[in-house]
Image 1 (spheres, helix red, strand yellow):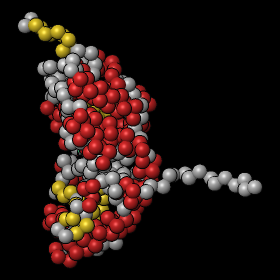
Image 2 (cartoon, protein in one colour):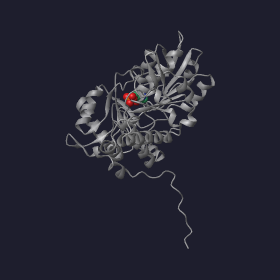
Image 3 (cartoon, rainbow, N blue to C red):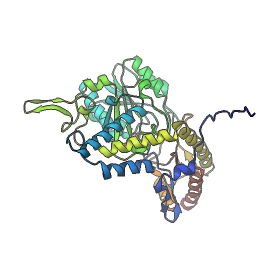
Image 4 (tube, rainbow, N blue to C red):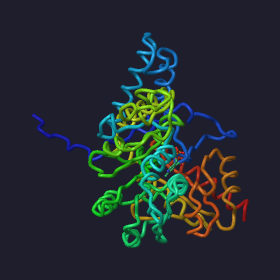
Length: 412
Ligand code: PLP
């Protein structure tokens, strides 16, 4: 009798071909070349499961939610609210704490207007980091706060000692990006949340670049607010969420008024619906919620541990491949990094590099990536950014490296 039991795999292997087959757009031919889609930090492509959920909703359940008594309205409402449950389960939190928004940007603006602004005193600060996306800087300024930024070290990691030293009695809020969209740096948010909270300072985490790559447990993170966008996690564009502590949601005044967010309305005044609906004025993006839930289910099906392991392996492969290209300078080499490769190529303008890569079928982003202060920190106006997702493989990196060698030749 064979009593040998194979040891369990530490990481379940990822079936790349099977995953790619679920993304029809990856079959597109670009300028006669195979598509190497490496612009995932801007937006990810959508699997069949998400496309099907959107299509099926519009074919079989489309109606406005929460209002009519007819069958289609019931179907739409059921699917929409079931999506909230599935999204809450993915993040290990309660459905009442999930406010649907247009995405990370709108979520941060909501916190700026409904939470920060009414509490602001003259001289109050929001402590951010030097690697924030503009959407985690400008809303605080619009609300009237001063933004103070903790410096970024040469390798693209946060200067944590300097960040700590900037926490002060004037700090009304800490706002920090979990994963930098320009550098890939992973910030030690658990540690930062604990330190800020120990001083009684609320914390907002921008998770836009995190949720498709790492498990986020909102029950244990300890933050006050968490923001993310569906489209960076295989879901539809223009949809996202704000997670907040229930006591904040209860205490905050709504930011936008209109249908669905009220309990009673009269010309003398109005009262608000319960959370989270009091922050969801107007007809929501119903299919967005359904698509986001389908995307998160899809991620769970593949497994975040397997996704993270695959992307990490590819990041190492890509880093080595790019370092072999003469004149290429990688920007962002922190020890703890997600799948983002930002770089400049000698004197060549990143836009010119990007155009040549496009001709070779390679989709990357070029520009400041909505992080102008960070570009200034590294003394560059822009970078070329290749960003990874679960469907990328070594062939994409090889195609990128070959195209970069061509660009280097043509632009030198
Ligand atoms: N924060 C980070 C780190 C991002 O990468 C982005 C998008 O690039 C945003 C915020 C804004 O996300 P959205 O445009 O989906 O609102």
